[in-house]
Length: 258
Image 1 (cartoon, rainbow, N blue to C red):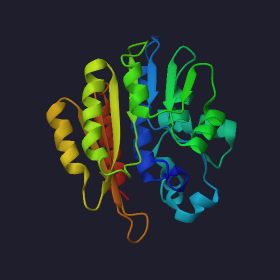
Image 2: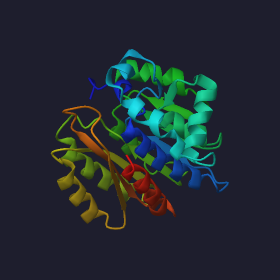
Image 3: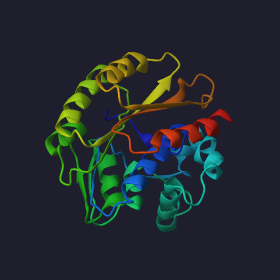
Image 4: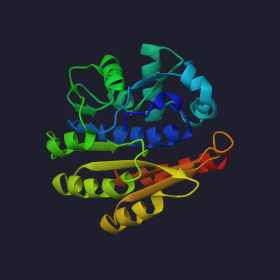
């Protein structure tokens, strides 16, 4: 969706959930000295300034990472990625998932990042340039379908759309079915918002029926402000790495404390 700007929402509680799960999976994958592929279909700009006018307007980061960073110990892949990005770009920055992946992956790994929005794509190019990273100004699903199965075959895909197009709830499971058939060993992660009217439920039932061994992990949290529709965050993970379900239980306890 070309109108969507994540700068208003970077570092919120949904980002904390999504990025903690992502970082944990990447941390597990990099324990083995084998290269892997990382694919992201809706990458955004990659780096956000939490002192920007957009972030200050919503205050979502103040209720998110700024409030809960102490949930994560020094050995947490999420905190390691956060600290690595801030040491390079400044203490008031927050990494989007492309920079979290870059912080945790190695020069021998391959990253493929798609972002269609012209300004966001340009910013992503500045933030995420690296020899092992290819950035596409292209529809993310077109990119992913053209790459799968990637080389190396071992790896992870993150699908993180804006969900501003209502038909996404119908079309995205179909895209995932094709990707999972092409890349049957790949970890495929889908993030979705939990809104007060719960439009995700029919989609989730379709996904769970098609992929019964997948991991569904959801957390709830208070709305960011009066009238705000998002009350939680969900991750649907095909081929989840070992231990990710247990890690999700630790997040359950943290979010329950809010």
